[in-house]
Image (tube, rainbow, N blue to C red):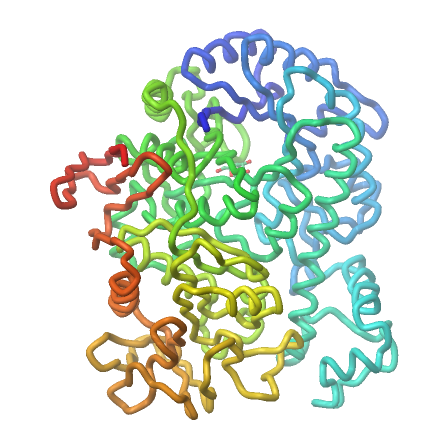
Length: 633
Ligand code: GAL
């Protein structure tokens, strides 16, 4: 594969006589893709039925004839004001029952039928006009589903749609009462029409009520996306893409991905470190100019699977952003480093957000590849450097990793609904496992929970996976590598109840979770010769084999060396101890790295990344400050 670079461009933000020069400058800088149109609705249809596409025709033709491949977008993330006036109840409602206003973006509720039809209509008009346009080589649907907390809506439309969804799932109200066990607190219903949304209840709603609402809300995103992909496919043969986000887990990305051809995501390493990370202040200061060295790669690995092997970075941070609590400059070299890291994880295209900084409106303080006056900003030179360096490669191709980690959206929702300890967060748990594996220099594949084939892997990990479904269960039985599970793996039915035979329900693991406890932040439980648990601890009984005990006598690891269960939330050092032992036993070579260095193996190269402003060494390998190096393997 030959990776390419691109940028996000808004012709409607700039005078028309500047478009030609912008297109030529992009090409001269080494960019060959340009994404346009995702927020342009008010200029395409200023009033209902009053279409104005000629300016966009000209923009596409200028960009395309300069040699750029265009990604055209549906503009549905920013419905103009006239759409809101037509459908005042299309606005999203938060869990306090407050309607969120128009005046920014993503103000629609996924369940509003009127808006859904408007979105299909404008998508069809755009697709009809440009579906066969020779310059358009890919399509983006909407923009960042779920961003700004917009998956869950507590509107009247959502309520109506939720009742229909429940009736479809349970058929009769008796079945729902039985599955939800509504006998508890006299919550039995006589009719689907009595069911409310699970917000504003006096105390917790029934957890299965809340979990079903999360499943329903995810399905609404899937339907919305599917309705657009069906329309686009009538008019274009080009690949369909959505740009997902970092650490947004409110909908099932694997399922959205089934209706698309390529996954992409928007990578803002410094913004995410400040805004979406639970790392310590010390860590944030240390990495303020690079971002968390594992956060980007986690999402690269996740979206590679969501896209079924095909994925892009649609938006790459090129300089300071405007939206995090603090917005530092990237270190010199960081933009190049992030770009190479994405390429090493398989990105087909890395596209920067945005070409030129806008001197107006909400994002006027957000850097672009160019300053507002058109002068190159530091990120542009680094992008051009990658473009030149890419010429040294014939192809950069992915290989199946030896290690796979399962990531499940439903488990995210389940443990949000019922965490049992306020810091039990599923993303954090899986991410801790990922971080420890990466710190050992390992390359990782992320798999969905319904993975039916584990062949080719040597180790598969599934921490916190609430329920093991039939496909995975079969695959586990056929698997001849090492399976690592726990804590909380296989601990709930799909109805969000404790199974009749007590957990963990995991093929090949014998034992019973007799009790669980969550721990205050300053409490640890020590494991003999291995390390510590924090946050969460289970008391396992009836196990036929305890591999390791805690100092307090409780089992810490049960099972056997090919299939074992960890009974608590192990800290980083402990996880590294456990995983390095597994690597030794499986002949997987690993290298313990300092926290600034990461590596990635592709089919013919190994890449090394240095997330620090000082040179790092790994054995005889020297990685310059903010550097990227590669070696043929
Ligand atoms: C993304 C979004 C872009 C822009 C960018 C700023 O989340 O898709 O439109 O707002 O953030 O960093």
